[in-house]
Length: 332
Ligand SMILES: [Zn+2]
Image (tube, rainbow, N blue to C red; front, side, top):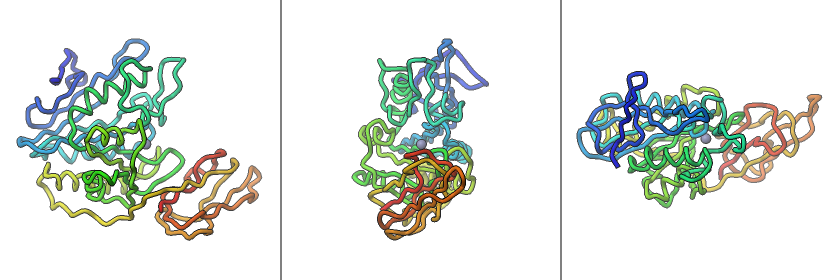
């Protein structure tokens, strides 16, 4: 498969429908990737940046915005793009900042279809897509088949916690694949989860296609956290330096972080207002107070205690929580 250039140029950038970094000239490239149409038949285009070195090397793909309300991931990918201008000497880096266009435009986690018969879809359960499927499945298929899969030896997918909740800098890595762990440690998150993966998740599909990947969660959904973005950018650049794509700066060694094998999620038994009694990354013992729930009158109705020892991985930052919503997540 060769890079397929269409006749269109939008905002000065060429429109492509297929990308193969192997046939590009060395240097920096900006494209619009034609992914599919809306229900009016208008084409939708994903922004794509490519940085290709003069020498052979590892090919990275960095994605963000698979969930449309996770802006810290998108901003991290933008800043990585700025930092890489003219700097990649070996291999290549493809950056796709907003995988889920309709979700991003609507401040929504999900993909929002124009088909009235199509529920909103969590795209991170839909990879590698389906050519004959519904609108979201076909959308994912085009991205996976013609943009992501052909261009990666290694991959990083940037996310945040879901809106209303917060993570620290938190990576998922499948410990059966050494490069997944290596990348996660080079990025230097606060916490890594040994994650065997689940079907439909981009990280899992990368790994099962033989392309080691890590998912990085950059703080909270919807709202920006610039210090954490800065740490994420430095971490990813450290990773690219260690894999010899860029020469600038001194590559640090893999960093020591808290590594966990399991998480437990404490969820609201009934709806109400939840005030966390712990902080992110705090170590707790079984029975420690995690959260206090008040009712519609502001009166205390319930206390939530730690079911076992662990480290606080996530909290609610929006006080009102529905029945079953996450209030605290621990990692063990
Ligand atoms: Zn996400």
